[in-house]
Length: 433
Ligand SMILES: *[C@@H]1O[C@H](CO)[C@@H](O)[C@H](O)[C@H]1NC(C)=O
Ligand SMILES: [Zn+2]
Image 1 (cartoon, rainbow, N blue to C red):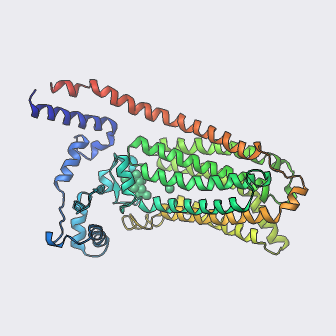
Image 2: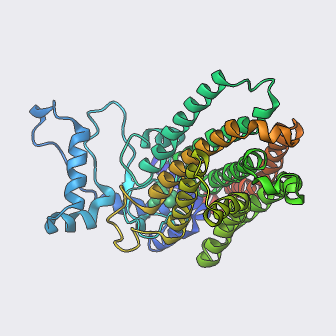
C-alpha cells in the first residue's frame, strides 16, 4: 500500500469512527463524516493576522477581545463576515507558545451540545483534557460558568477554615451538622466548575460530567436537610414525627433527585420539554422539602409578628435567591429573547450560578446564626446530633449517589468502548487495503 493510500485509509477510518460516535454530525458534513464537514469549514477559514509583523509587541489576547467586541457590536459588514466564518476564525495565537482552542458556532456542533439561545463560543466537542483546562482562560460560552463556581468554592473553603479555627469540629458533636453543610457547599460549586470545564471532551463525558454535577447538587440538598433538621427546625416542631424522620426522608430525596436528573439527560434530544420538566422537578422536590421548616418559621413570624432575628433575615434572603435561581434555571432568560447576544456574558446559566452562590451565602449565614443563638435551647430539648445522623448519613448517601451515577454512566462508557473496538473490523478499513 502506498504512503498516500495508507494516509487515505487512516483518514477514511477516522471519519468513519467519528461518523459512528457522532451520528448527528452527518447533517453538518452533508452526507460526509465529520472530518470532511469540518475541513470544509476550515477551508472557509478566515485568517486574521496582525497588521504587520513588526508590531509583535501587541497582545494577541487583546486583539482577540477587540475582534469579539466587533463581532458582537454594531458594524453590519463585519457581522456578515462573522456569520460566515466566525466559527473558523484563525486566532493570532501563534505568538503564544500555547495555542488556544478554536471556537465554533451552533450549527457546527452535534445536537447534544447545543444550548437554546447560544449561537457562538462553543468549544470543540472532542477537546482534549488540556484544551478543556486551557479553555477556561479563553473567552468562550462556558468560561464565566466555570469561574462563577470556581471562585465561590474558595470563598466557602475560606469560611470553612475560619469556622474550623473558631469551633471544635472534631469533638463537639453539636457542630457536626454544620461540618456536613460546609463540606457540601464547598463540593457542589467545585464539581459544577469541573463539569463545565471537562464537559466538551465527548458526548459521553458531557453526560457523565453533568451526572456528577447533579449528584453534588443532590448531596447539597442533603447537607441542607441535615443542618436545617438540627438547627433551623421551628420550636413547635422539635421532636415531632417530621423532625425525627427529616434526615431519613432527605436521603430518599437525594436518591430520587440524582436518579431522575440523570435519567432526564437521556430524554433531552427526543423530548426536550419533558426532560426539562423532570430535571426541574428532580431538584425542586428535595429543596422544597428541606425548606418547609423554614417557610413555617418565616410565615409564623409574619403572622404573629416577631422581632426579625439575624438568622431569619438571612434565611429570607436565601429563600428569595432560591426562587430566583429556580426561575433562571427554567426560564432561559435573557438569551431566549435575543439569541446570540449573551453567548459569552450574561446568559441564564451564569446568572443561575451567581444567584445560587449568593443564595448559599445567605443560607450559610442563617444556619450559623441559628446554630450559635439556639444552642442552649436545642440542647435543653434533647436535640443532640449523632455521628450516624450527620457524617455517617453523608458518607452513606455519597456512596449511594456514586452507585447511581455509575449505573447511568456504565452504558455510555460501554457503548463508547464497544464502538471504538468494533472499528478495528469495520469494512471501511478493509476496503482500502
Ligand atoms: C457551551 O458550549 C459547549 C460546547 O462547546 C456546550 O456543551 C455547552 O452546552 C454550551 N454552554 C452554554 C451555556 O451555552
Ligand atoms: Zn452549571
